[in-house]
Image 1 (tube, rainbow, N blue to C red):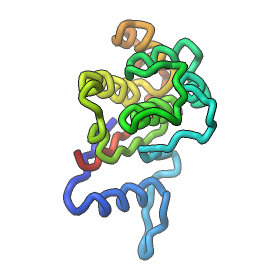
Image 2 (cartoon, helix red, strand yellow; image 1 turned 180 degrees about the vertical axis):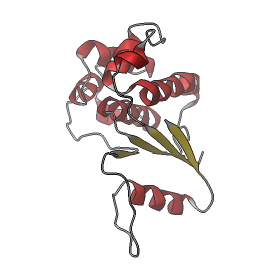
Image 3 (spheres, rainbow, N blue to C red; image 1 turned 30 degrees about the vertical axis):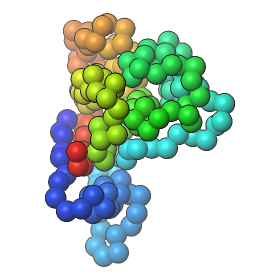
Length: 175
């Protein structure tokens, strides 16, 4: 996989560029071409407006098992039973990132990913980076199950067990 860092211009221009790349808006002139096999997700993704939905249930709706949802919530310092719409911005962003990784896009785009991180979550930055690396190297939900079930180390031979490697690209803007 690749990591692409977008810099220069204003934050608005960078967000417009990522929105074009993610096919969220259409260009006024010309065209943006991505291979058909590419599936981009732009973060931050808003939570689904289910008022009584917990963090655990939100992750389960994205494809996590109940056990994996609880472990992911703990990795990010969240209570799995907390109502997801009441999370502070930094935790809501981390929840959105976890949901996106579970969906296993081929391109994950993030605008200033750690900008709103609260001081008590700064120590989670290494875990966030490791989760992004695992997603990029091994894929979505199954790789996270392996990671969370093995104290943060993907099992030996994971690359070979995944069959054909899928290219995954992380695009980061700002920071």
